[in-house]
Image (cartoon, rainbow, N blue to C red; front, top):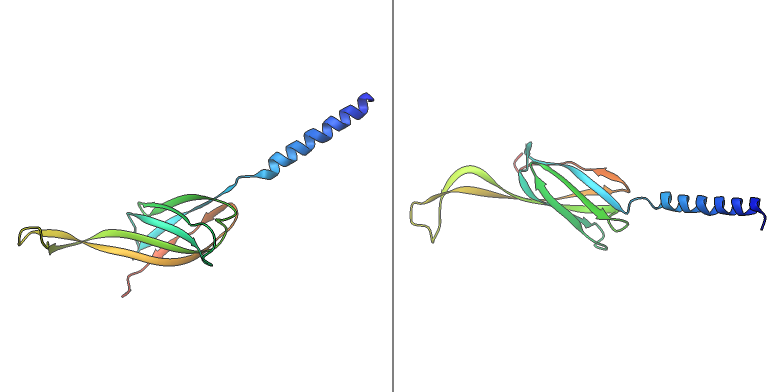
Length: 137
């Protein structure tokens, strides 16, 4: 085989390999954002992304200091999602504790937060902030 043909063949193989490696790209999508309740960051909780059509995988993670960042495998993570946000926060009110606590014992009241939102997850980086409001606001 002539030297020039071998060189061209090697160059073609190397070029094809480089293009295949570059074309593979990451196999995950990242979703991040902030979650507030009546304008205040949700301190702790969970956020879950569920397929809007009910088909495919769900994914999610923790809320910390009003922020979240989760990664999920594509292609299942892409598309329309129902977003479930759940948290418990202190209200600052004291209420009387029920049994088995002694009568007159006071504890801080907790308020459960739960909301279902919607979003669209696309290939690459995604930023979705959720501003939740109390029913009366």
